[in-house]
Image 1: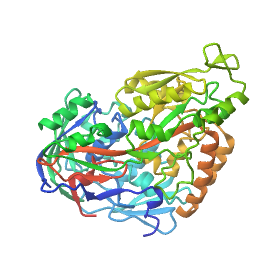
Image 2: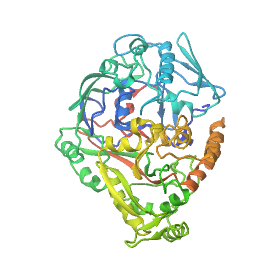
Image 3: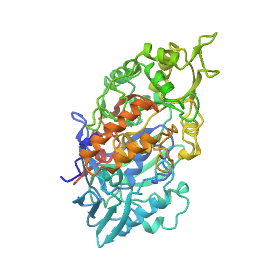
Image 4: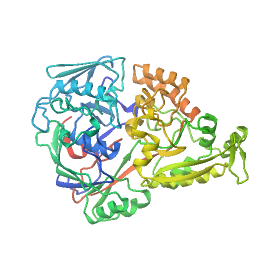
Length: 527
């Protein structure tokens, strides 16, 4: 299967529908609820990775798609390579854009160059590794600057293809309107209101498969409790919020409500601002890491519905993951702080280099498990003489402090923050490198401001590996550096559980990293 079997990156999905009994496998209309407006649903204007990017990918197709543990063609009929460096992509016949124009190989070439020229924002796709891209009739050829066995997953399955005839003159991608939300995917954006939501209608000319739901209504319902109440009454048919473990049994007991579950691979982290003292000292970061009982967080905040965080960051279910366990050792944490000269003050809070070890911890106000975890972390750090003040904030305000304008070169303004990265970051060694590189141009996801020349060298060695097997070996060195340097604490990885009304539609299909809101839930693909 050449280099396209990607199980070493943590798995995929698509193909195992929820156990839905006598539930409906097609539907005229399905209403799903999201928590906030997701912009105009172009590849540059969605507000979140989930569920925003998931909705975008219903409108804009990619060249490939993750199916199970493989990456297979979507717009591309096949994905061919002999050396992991030159990739040949013959396109399917009969592809069209939603406006009826033909989708050609030239559109793919344009898309690559457009992303190269607009490498900004949360949804930017890194195509810098593509040295040459060309079109010959209905076939696209991409030549990389080096062999990369993860290229299909990192780029081909993530890069939404753009219509050149609509995007050629676009300069400010962040201002793209709904007139540019015209793709080749299974759904057409029919209407949009930034307060109430979206209407998506089935693309009657969709080539890769048969669309199973005629209309998807997307309703904006900010409050978690209101979403689940609407689900119980039948006002919505699916909630894009993870069902809190505390509510799972109650929801499942409701008539005609079922839950689709799976491994999310997304991480939940405690970030340190590595630019700011005392977090610029890895010894301080390691001591704090030792003081946090991640098993307690998992058991208490998630009721065990997840996987314990790995000190090396990579999800333990991935063959790329290195062996490891929780570094929790409160005695060792106290000893390490003593050795650093952090002496208790009159109020019991340690003082280091003349400054009290009292820090703000930012938490997204709508994230129930993160709020509870922050409270537990506050108690745990108090045991070693560190004071934590929790600041609950709405998502945009928190992002502006941690990742202003999605540009790490702008710096950051926080002590500690609860944070998370979605599955694509977790499943690709290239994206993991972006979390750590010192240079913002390479470390475009380095929201902690971590800078370490030795780690940069280890990342270079990882990227130079030409086979998946070589990357697995090199990834162990990266994870050892993460565990030793502790730029953040990987707390846990949540399991996903999403509730839906099976009396309306039961075709929800799990895809690792995209939950149940993905193309496989709505399309019977011919892949």
